[in-house]
Length: 460
Image (cartoon, rainbow, N blue to C red; front, side, top):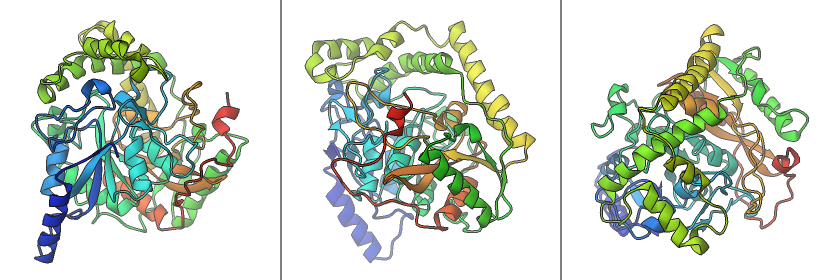
């Protein structure tokens, strides 16, 4: 946690009074909660996105998600650290590090990455600092740290949860979502934060919010047709071997597994990145104007200049090459942007997830959330990604649930369920059925040095 809300004690006392009097505002009434520090909260805590350029800047108002949480009686303890600017500042960034909060540590092994960018949100839940947390995801930023810390993470369909007040990267991929210790809590939290919001036009086409807790069914996998994205299972190492056994076990829960689907490893690379940078350039000034007009920072150029003026604090571990590339991008009317967006949405949706789900009559697709164990924190080499399943749902804007799936050499791994747009209730129910089938969640050990093999390093 990098900021404690001055309202937290009062919220907790009010929640106690309400509950003592028989008033239950929501399924999360009285539960403690952390918010990723790129979500506006006007409670006296700063919203910084991890950057010293916004240190001490309290937003003009709460984000819509925060308003909903307060109305639901949640106790917002404070702000959670994150990968600075949600990992969009530099291509060689280190997950979980920000100039404001320093390095977030993985409680399962303090020398291992918590992944990101919702690093602090996942760690706060895994370490039982709070009951639940809100993260944000553009491309794996909820699901990856959840998998690396053995907690539940849900990236909703883009448009199910308002992004109002969230420091933006991409209006086509950004979303806020729950991080919790179990699927029931994720369903409860989603029930509170989901729904249309006039401040975020993309939500106006979303279906009405559901009672996702009521939809949970421990027998949900009976009769379900589940596709297995075999392309994302590594071969010849214990991570891949372990995850194959985990997925095969879904058959004992009544699922029919289809291993024949074709979901090629994404090759959209620079085009997908170009979309994010175009949209970042468009979105950052708008957020600053609406939520931090008093910051003295009004544009991406101002942020770049601030970093250059404070290199020892901001640039000593990695630079800002992605920001510099963003500055050179055109606007959202640029032909290159529109062409890249059309290509990535076609490949991820029509030719990717939609085709696999439709042609094979599938209810969901499963794969390892990450194809590696948490890698060693390495400021010289940066993050060490291998195959990453979250990219498909992220680029498509479709829902993605990750649940704990045990450990490999004592380090957490996660199992992902991905489905079509607005299938959160079904995915949560599948995750719940899997969760109830065994002891999958690892407890933090807080060891300073892990004994696990660094599969990410081996792959380079």
